[in-house]
Length: 235
Length: 316
Image (cartoon, rainbow over all chains, first blue to last red; front, side, top):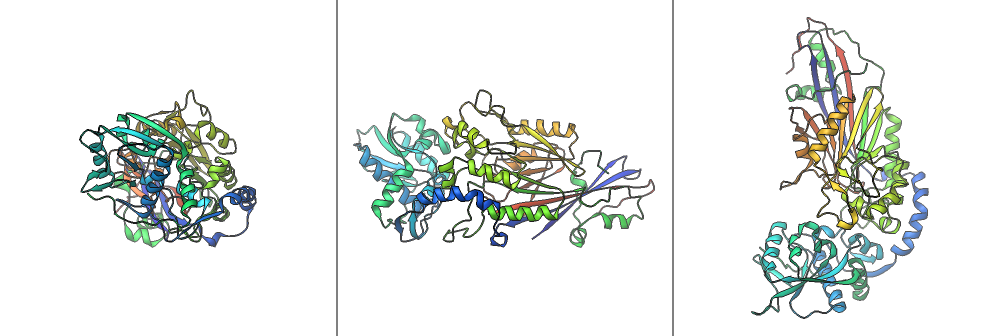
């Protein structure tokens, strides 16, 4: 669809005197890039050697997806899968006693996992960033900050805890509990997505593993990805 | 004839006569018919007074078309097809300007494996004439950007990042002027606040400067330098619920900008949105989603006519 605007411009000595009139016609279009434009060209030959090298690694099928995994707010099947696997992979690397849950960000999940064969490349598209997994020790008082943050954002991927009517439900908190652990990414711990409550952290432990590597490991070990669309967050 | 003065896109003269809008490609013939026979001094040479702007944003390393099993955009996009589309427009139009509003990097394994080099090579081949840096264009770090940028033959326009004491220092420009036929086009780039969006280590000592102040400064300079059309290439994002600076705010709080080509929020606009600037003049804002799914096209056609003293213009 072509849309048209017209802008008529007047300047000079006024409308009655000798004056120049500028007209600017503006037409616009949002042109869809489709196979209508598919004909072999120079781009293919530039891309080709890069693609061959990439496909050799990325096209390898490592798991099967029984359903589409999609992200959403307050939750989604991709939110749950991502948070679940980051939590379980991390706990096997750096086991901690005490309350622990996983908190990621919706914005960091960059692509759905589609039903069917899951390739290495699919996991790269889901988690393209080189973010590292980190366990962050937080004072108990920050639970309120997290509740406020989640309410404002509308929900982020969590595992090992639930938000019920806006309140964080986390097992293992007793009356003498002073801190708890959050499994997350270095990006979020360092203030990414304005998760400023991480500034109040007491300590941190890097897992030495990228988020993407943990997801690749989990996909391979699950073989058929565990699809779980349970609602973990309500306000 | 080249227009001597700068365009004043005043709200009161922004004609909204739908009959005129739908009736033809140009408002001018209808207007002129109403007022007699103006003395025409305009350059009638076809093409010299027209400019076709093609633009993308947030292509995010999407080099191949989206796969056939993609949940949302199966079979859409692809750089080879974009090339074909652009070439077709270039064959039809004399003056084409191709620009990108940032976030060229990150999103497919092409970036993970090759660090953005292929993206730069392809954009150079497509004939991009300017781009601005998005937040994800810092994802390879500053050194990584330098390594990829070596393969780009077009300038990166960044006016509100201070790259002093970083490896990027001197590799970007604040603004650019391009002569397109009779039209002198001024371009500058505006980037988004990196704090909280990009890991600190990735952007190092880069300083973020006030986007509104820098935009006003750059647009004013381009006006002084005689540009007929001033385009801001922005990665601020289209609009926000909170007080973050957006393209909408940028348009409202500045002067001398005619068009903002935006990015970051992955907003699919069907047509440019109009805003009103500090001087009451119209600013157009456009953005075409992400991933190279669409290419935005905006055609400007400029006409200058001169009238005799007794003529009276009636604008509805």
